[in-house]
Amino acid sequence: MAFTVTTNKSGVVVVAVEGQLIVGNRQELKQKVLDALEKGGRKFVIDFTRTGYIDSSGLGVLVSLSKKIRELGGDLRLAGLNEDLQTLFELTKLDTLFSITRTPEEALAAF
Amino acid sequence: MTSPLRVGVRRPDGPEPDIELWLHVPSRLDLVGEAVDLLAAQTERERRTALSARQLRFHFRTALAEALANAIIYGNRLDPAKDVEVRIHVGSDQVRVEVTDAGDGFDPDALPDPTDPENVDREQGRGLYVIRHLADEVTFNAKGNRLCLVFRTQ
Image (tube, rainbow over all chains, first blue to last red):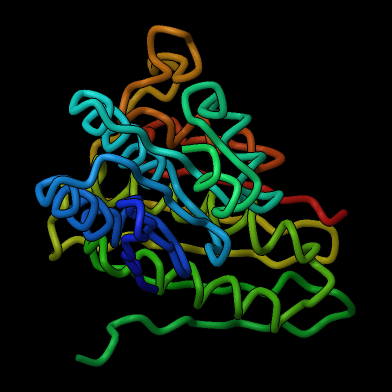
């Protein structure tokens, strides 16, 4: 279970979520994104390609980060949701709140 | 640090008896992921055909993680001296999961709909909604401190 943060040449911060994003580790993700915001990052992609499952507190952290990033004039995109995660976003109607792309490459290209 | 989590197993005699699993989880949020993994793995080990791969990977895990988080946060109020008890009956046509906390219970019908446009950007309040959509059957005891989830074999 880990979060890997990389910043590409255009300054887009990509956070890869490996394993779960749940009540026990959501604060770690939140802190990593807040740290990157602090350092001036404004464009974010969260990559779920290697994510197992997300619970509602994981979803809550994404909602909170999305608000924070927007307040600072930035943009957050989600990418790489598998069929299960896509279902979860649809049933909570969070697919209407987030900009979601199929792959992280597509998210990067859209900035 | 060694984990305090040990799954108990009872396999009664008989042609196709329900296998019973149980686990006591201290009220620590950092144990939720491990508890879910242990119970999913043991359920699959006991009766591989009880749930489909997708049910086990997605429905069972997500709903159980939600139920444990709710029991720890709202039921036991994060008191590490209080346990959440999980009991799972692995049957031939369904898996029944009971999650009991040591709290005073609550009224599950009094919660707002998290998908209402005015609620959809809230950070909290989706747990029970998610559980209700992922399990085939969701019931509470009268007190409101025991949640019972049923996943039917597909």
